[in-house]
Image (cartoon, rainbow, N blue to C red; front, side, top):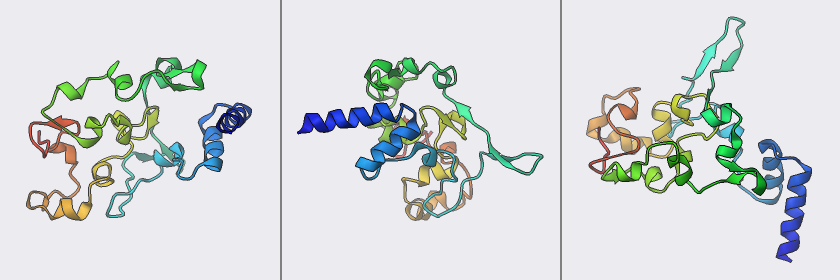
Length: 185
């Protein structure tokens, strides 16, 4: 029974193509909670205060809004196979974070204390693997990045954060790791 379900699923995936939007539609039909990457990146993410993050949007002379996109180099060069195995329906060549560490710094050996997503090998909790409206392929910008996971009431209630206004958290905290539990720079 399981093999026939798997074969049916593979057949559906092949019929609907290998674009991410097609895959999202098929997966969403069968499974609840499938994230849609086009909704995750660049669609006015909000922080835990409900503030919209519009720092990566610029106004054009025609009065229309267009995002300024940043691209991961292999994605921009259409070198999908540097991360994905085309013979296995686009699955990753390696698990995270080992795949990222093939080109990027391995933070697990660099810091005494790691930020949670870094320690868990979840680079994609903060970085988009393909494109983003934010520099460094961040999925959100400014405080919205950190306050998406960290509770804003708790963070802003701390004495050290009383006057931070709209300052970036990364002005004081290293987003990857540090020498203490507060990962201060």
